Image (cartoon, rainbow, N blue to C red):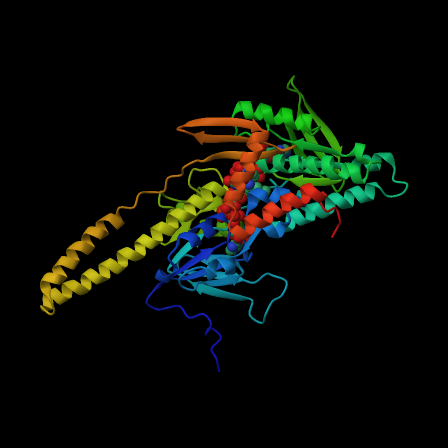
Length: 479
Ligand code: FAD
Ligand code: NAD
């Protein structure tokens, strides 16, 4: 009989490197890593990489969701040495025993759906979950915008709201409610989604349901005095003016306090300093108020005394080692390294770790060879002059390899789509900064994101989707 673990046979001469997640950080690491140096095991509940920057476009069907997904098995197939992938969620990490507990929480489960994986080295790249700040009703009533399933749900709900509003005999105030799309959070996710939604309305919904379309309205709610806080003042003003021209209602200094199935209750700060409670009826509610720490990360942090003060994720040192551990690294949105939780940061961190691990493996190989040659010299077997020469060369190389500089993030700039074929960009340009907004920036936005797509296949699919929706309009069938 075959042993159940026969399919998973790590090479005893290599260290086992377990990588959690298949997002921006982990996939950048995998791309860079020489897999032949380690027994590489990847664990993620999602068997694909998701190109998040174009996710808002999937909510309206400008881009089809499969165009921005890349199967992780296809990524691993391209590697020199085989790496294992398990579609599962890491449920706990034991840093003492050096094992990760994993569970298959997908719809179809086999007789075995939970097990443990031992590691020598562990990379935590599990990202973050959606922040709700414990505000009542958010989880039950709103859509998030983080995963493919979220975008699909939003796409379906937009059309459901429109079709329900168009139902025979629908009361006017009910039509107003159903056609009211509310977005909470004026960060880039909220702004980009609001822009995409307004485009959808202008370019398609208006033509298809002309009788009720004047009632369609997008409202963007933000707690702070302005949207897109990470952009420069000029671009914030440009964005707010453009959104207003697009007829998006921006409600700043408005904090959502409670959500019910049909209304949002918020507190508005008036210019005179007074506060007013308002109730806003909605048909679709999208919640985009940023990141919260995943339970697996909280659980691990609680087991490491040095992490007792880290509230926003795993505090790492300049080599991305989780503080208080020797063999756990963290990258991306779950790591606290002093940078913003963006794809740009996550992928640079992943890339850095890939190089670091390649170097570590080379160091070990060189050290082992030096030891072998030295014992030959001691025993005076073989050509000692040749051995001494090789040792010298290896030591010189080792010095270079060991000289790894700590991780340093290089900011390439911020880009966001704001609707009506306009985008804003704060980019580094010839040692200076360039802040631009408008239609040219939109072309730049498109080409930048295209060039960043994971594969040529993704790139071609995205271009075809853009052409398709331009030529035939977006597909409004409600799947
Ligand atoms: P993620 O990419 O979120 O990946 C986390 C991975 O871990 C996933 O594969 C997940 O399935 C897996 N996972 C989760 N739980 C577990 C578990 N328990 N065990 C194992 N695996 C687990 N950033 C930019 O720089 N530019 C942009 O234009 C941009 N646009 C964005 C648009 C949207 C709509 C969103 C939501 C985000 C955007 N971001 C952008 C932010 C960017 O997507 C994140 O910062 C980035 O995804 C972080 O990478 P990560 O690898 O840390 O996490
Ligand atoms: P965010 O944290 O950037 O913004 C969330 C916003 O929600 C904040 O401005 C906050 O003030 C507001 N908010 C919080 N609670 C609220 C409440 N109760 N009522 C009203 N408003 C409330 O979140 P995000 O937009 O999801 O972005 C998350 C990360 O992903 C960021 O680091 C961002 O830079 C990155 N991202 C980048 C891009 C891009 O570069 N184009 C796109 C999407 C996301």
